[in-house]
Image 1 (tube, rainbow, N blue to C red):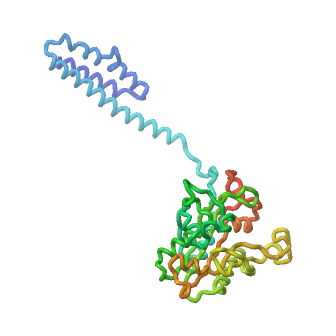
Image 2 (cartoon, rainbow, N blue to C red):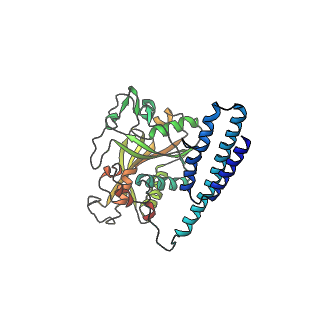
Length: 345
């Protein structure tokens, strides 16, 4: 039996060594390990062997030898074929590359980042807060108690009961920040984020929109500090020639309250369709923090004062990029966003 196996091993070695391609190598596998293969027939003869243990050992030796030789030769042939393919398929690196389209940043994210960069350069922190908010932070601490008519203008979406809601403004982040500061530290912060109100969607209204609100609390803060801050923002966003003005207004959480306007950057104050022939464009609301809000959030209004302001990110983007429909920001037409890529502005 040993002599017979040695002869078989020699035949296997010669057959595999003389194979020149993978197809012929696979045919050898059929020859030796197929249903009627040489080694398969030997395995079936173990029942008639006198010394089954010795017989099985020799047959397994032949099978192992074939498998190892097969794998080694297969690796060699695959390497040879790969090298031939690489030599025959040269790449012409002088050809122009295929242009791969890339995405562009969201328009609103661009605006928010611009505003953040300006305020951070003035020492402000960027603070985030929950979109699912408590009535306490969204209304009550901000001088809008239950039953106050001002709530009608900020009608939002309630969750489970009247105490849990989707925030109608980012002002709750200001309240949370003041409470966490303990009433004895100055605050400089902005809080950009998504807000919700039960508005009917049209060209200028949306049930969801992005707000960028800011708060400064310190000692001896006046309306002139707010005006100076607003001047810086307006010039950074709309150009150094931009002029600003305040008009009296009313907000429950500020006193006095103002509407902030910029001079029309299209007609330069002469009057056009964008500014409705007034020469001015309203961009935000602002004012001095109401004493009740300071008191509710742990600050002594006799010692501390501050100002707050709020921009609509969509409003800024519509003005800056000439967009006339707020729904553009939330539709899935990617052709819109590529025209406002920050790299091209």
